[in-house]
Image (cartoon, rainbow, N blue to C red):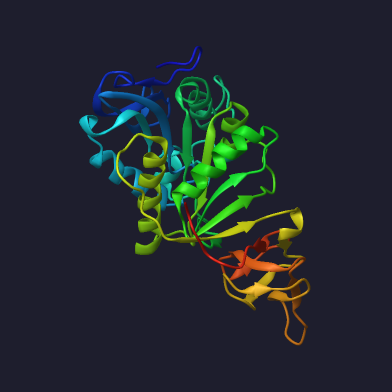
Length: 339
């Protein structure tokens, strides 16, 4: 599958039955290799029975690991005779960033998840984004784009969908997020949706589930287990895999307005006042910011702007003006077993 004017070429057939492991070959001329290529690993599994196409992406940011680990495991577990439809797996969407362990690509300095729908004649990252949107998204009925907090954020582990103008599509997205069955299920409000893969896929009419599964620039046994279980659940929900989804209580959260976000006004050392999952009220202190240039100065107090649950927080010990310090989400206050 190719996109007109885009130089990326897959090394395996995306339509032939069976499970194939290959690469997206992206020409990359550089000092070390004048006629070289960036070889982006991917897997395509086409079942013996007809069914939907599910696009699975991890590594959109290179310092987020649950998605890539779940996708790599899935690529070894799928068998064509035990599935319907097709699964396209890109564990390392921003491959150069994954290899560097950074949020943005070291090749061109571009944040992949702010450059969609990409550009066929753009930078390396923009070309990958363009290929995803013009070659892969037209094939997809459902997409799962894995994220976590990377080096700078930590989240309650949740699967998420967005509020959309297309209410039928919003319902499909919400159903898939519920099927993922993370410990929390979020109706998410992005700080800036422009350029996100999520936004581009939703605008293309593709049902989309995204996640935030902890963070801190690492993975845990629990967060990877949530990712792997959720990925399988989504494939069962889509009809790609047979069987019953694994169920556990999931608490419903919502981000109703930008008042969810609390930002740092000063630079300094961050002292958390509450932990993730804590119940807070508007005006409660989320964190203190202590100045580094002198003693005897009162810290800045960063407060919640609304009642709810602390769903995300700044992870590093140092903070800069404008950094997100905390995100508060409203809650249904009781776990629910997903139907």
